[in-house]
Length: 465
Image (cartoon, rainbow, N blue to C red; front, side, top):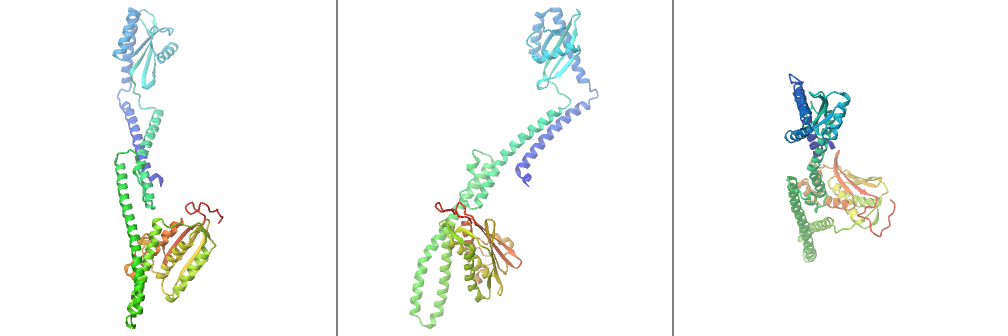
């Protein structure tokens, strides 16, 4: 799957395109010679020109002497950019200022007494041949052309090196283009995990392209979302705190009204008391959720026996479920120890089990298990209710989220129990998820058995699990 990423797509596309261009150029050069009706024409024409050049140079030196040959050499270098060197028949130089490549060609000609040509540095042709002057003296003429010689296609080593160089350039280009995308992915993942301070702009440096614009737009969006969430949390906290005092006064007034009311008004007062308790419970849940989300709650470094805690919660839940013709059963209960808050864990697990009791079918049982796997405790709670649509499973841990308005009104839920459970589990470094079972909903809670850095008290001594 990693080869399907944007980086590899850009890298391979650039590299294949460059390799195709190199191959096409090589094929065109090869075909240009292969389709020539006279394949020796170009080399033959060049050879004839060089032969005339050699005979002319030797004639100037042999008839007019070195004093006339030196201006001839300078003029050839200035006008044609061609270096000329002349040697006697034994390979001794007759002029100065030539390169070592020219001297090596002259030595090779003196040994073989045949014309020699070499493709040298940067594709320049060095050519030479033995020449006999009209006077009968023997010379060796060598010239080095300024213009590169175009061979019949590129050599295999040249093709391989060109493709490797194109691959390196393509790799660097793909890395430059995709590095902002990787940084953006990292920041988006951090933001999605709850780090509302994550921003892209500091990671992009001084880039001014479209990817940098995308990063700045994301930062603007993140700032707006963070501001809205912060405002929502403050609003919930303020409303919850402000409702506490009126509810307390309402309770006192309700008791006073009971003392001064006859039996006919008792039913109305009971209804008022019921609704007041519901509002009071809602306010308590809102305050608990606000504390968990704001980070005000801290996990104390106390050892918690999860099997004992779960047994107590199940006993209390079973007592509440019996009047509804429902049960809560424990199928497995392993010994598990972890560091955390007993009260917070109790509240989180209670909310999950009570939610299961609320929706399990009458006459059925909520199945609870606690198993230890390596350094993780798994708590599963399964009901036998209607379940949750697959598209809404990811949202049931959001505050005030309701799968069905009519169902929530019937059950009396407001959509905060699972939210509090999810915040509590994450505060302890765990994870919670929901899935539909065969005939109900299965909620799995994962809690770390070993102490994590976030939960370890500075003065607490580490204890083995």
